[in-house]
Amino acid sequence: MVYGEVMQDKVGAAPAGGENLLFLTDDQLRRGIEAMFFAYRAFTADPDMILTELDYGRAHHRAIHFINREPGLTVTALLDVLGVTKQSLNRVLRTLIEDGLVESRIGRRDRRERQLYLTEKGALLERRLSEAQRARMRAAYRAAGPQAVAGFRQVLEAMMDQETLRQYHALREMPE
Image 1 (cartoon, rainbow, N blue to C red):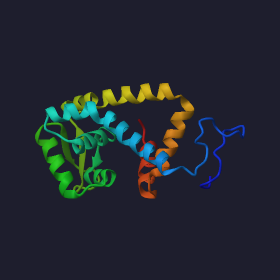
Image 2: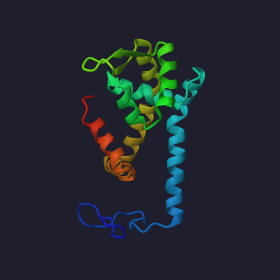
Image 3: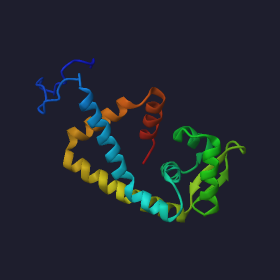
């Protein structure tokens, strides 16, 4: 769809709600930006409390999330997914390894690679961190309905640059 076209549902009628044109005002865009800020704050609030107790930050949470998502993920791949510097990731991983949450193993194909795995303790923390987020997402998805969920995902994907979108799609194709 080209900017400026009227968004239409499957039967061709413009959706209700008054914001059916893609020519959005600065105020409408500002409200969308603010909604994202507040939603993100709510989405991260519960994990942030847990992370604070452990003297960890959101970078630790993201690392734990993606290591859980793909056991055996290499340090290089994690750097790519997180989009952080090697130095900052090394600080995060060093802490997680020292605290017994992550295990680093020598790569099977390339001994220079380091593959990352959550320990049992790390898996328990990951579940604790993501439990509230899953509950929040589930409730929001149910309240909004399937069309809104699909539209939300479409908006998020449209905000991603091509490389980020490629990474996201690669994750979606992984077995769950």
